[in-house]
Length: 265
View 1 (tube, rainbow, N blue to C red):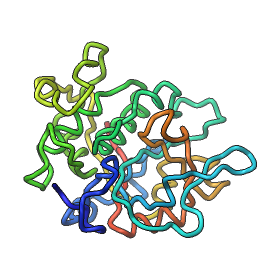
View 2 (cartoon, rainbow, N blue to C red):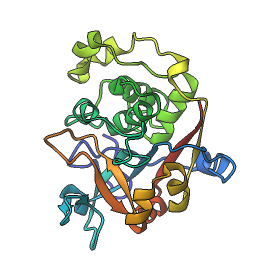
View 3 (spheres, helix red, strand yellow):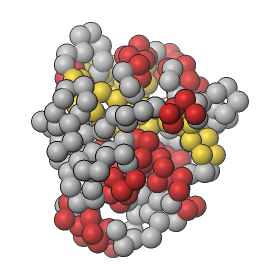
View 4 (spheres, rainbow, N blue to C red):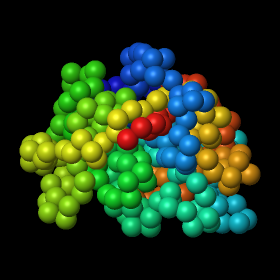
């Protein structure tokens, strides 16, 4: 079983199985810059260390949920989540839907990269995607020989973006539901053909919070000094939106975090 680098073992919570690439050539080769930052609000997919502090969001006096304040505790593993662009109260079309909160529930598997990256594609294209298909295919192309479709290992955000650029994605259809139940359906999922047009043409990598802020383009974020996380633990497992302070996100990016922005589709 693949070990998560900071803790030297597989995480006890299998949902926390985003893996850290051995090198960050993709980040240095394709950095997000001022000229490549999208002109409209776009979601950002991040793969970061997950601390014990993040397990139990705290609610403030206005009903907002928060993580990453105060002592972060210990690293429990790695996680991939999507950051929501724009403003929830603005009525714009960039927002996550309540139905996606239910739909993008990764269960107890190490599928967070597939779910966080597919959530990003839903926010971009306003449709649902087959997250477990992307999880399978990312394990086909990542750097670890012992990550394979049908196992419970995670993968990297880098690998998911390689699939989305090279092959595209599979838009969700109700007939796929039987393939979405457990790990054993990976072989059946492998027969699905992606559509290049459902993928991305290019993505770039942010290393600073100000770059992430520039992509999300959210006045609410800037007022709060925080980003909004869309987790993949379902309606009964986690709040829909959770705020994380900018300084905490920067710490996570500095700890071999990945943060990617689609710059062309």
